[in-house]
Image 1: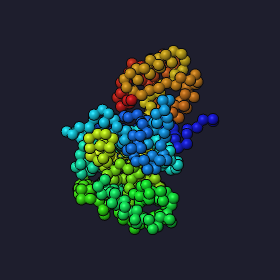
Image 2: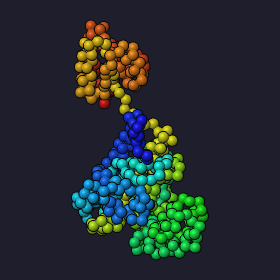
Image 3: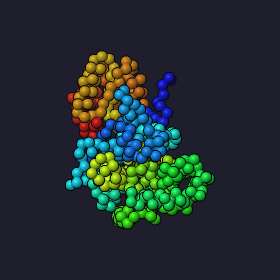
Image 4: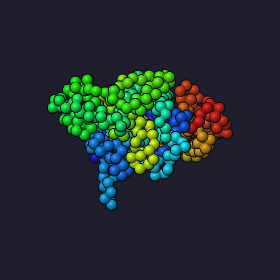
Length: 421
Ligand code: HAM
């Protein structure tokens, strides 16, 4: 085969799609409960939007963006995440007001030019939420609880919430200086990425997975030890309320996120069932972003879930995924029977019953064999005998039992048995 899906991307095939639909419909159900509305934004935006929001020295912006020039020479980028796009859309459409909390969610593909590995793709899918307009720790807790509730609804087990504070513009600069001072004497022995990070983004050193770097990171200062009073009070407020809400969490003072817009609380939901890429969800507060992008300063908090990783955890937890099964498959012999079968097929579909017909010109035996493979709850057979008696042979595929049902009673027969779309 000449053409293949690009590296780091994949097709979601019909037999795999039910798990995606299960996650999406569960998410929509929970979002409705929490009063979040859906927003859909373009998959590409001006490159500058992402560089400004995510941070010009982050890995995402320096290495991972799919950036191209359009025919008029404008630099555009496939969205590597959607928080920046949502803020842009809110500002462009005046969705944020001082008298309300704007609560939004999105579901869709994101694009990052990363080295593909288990749990890491170049096109991947996120489900995310953003809440604009409140500094109340209760909204942080609501956002975290929303994620936890969704994972519960999906039947995921073995998850933990890691939480930290990365400080704000008032307290982070001093902490970054402290970090630089701490790492300076050892930086020669650390990895090349950390050498660069020391200069441009020292906080990210805390997140380095390199074994040699880990040795030095273990006793590095923690952001929480030097946050300002405001960040501390906010973080403690969140912790207290998370305890009251019964959320199982741990403070992880090495949790720094890969995007620069965070201020204060950051969190991740991690799974023991995944390998190196073990975060199924990441988020936090970003109180400066709306202001930085030209809006009125607006406290904000949100998260995004990686759907591919959720599916991995679902698989390893043996969660049963509800599958839509065909209700009735119509099998006919001869032209007249086919016309009658098609008439019944349309009537079934019009009354909301999922139905299909075997259109091949082959024996009833061959059609029955195929019906077994397709997986249908009932097959409805019409041949000469059935036409003569004006009744179909209806076969319950699971039980293997058969009965004659008059053509005129077919609809009520299936309705009585709870077969629907
Ligand atoms: P993020 O941590 O970059 O945050 O991504 C969120 C989640 O997306 C990760 O925890 C992971 O599950 C999934 N993910 C990220 N990159 C990949 C990849 N290459 N392949 C597969 N899955 C991936 C954000 O994107 C922020 N916008 C979250 C946020 C919303 N913060 C505030 N509001």
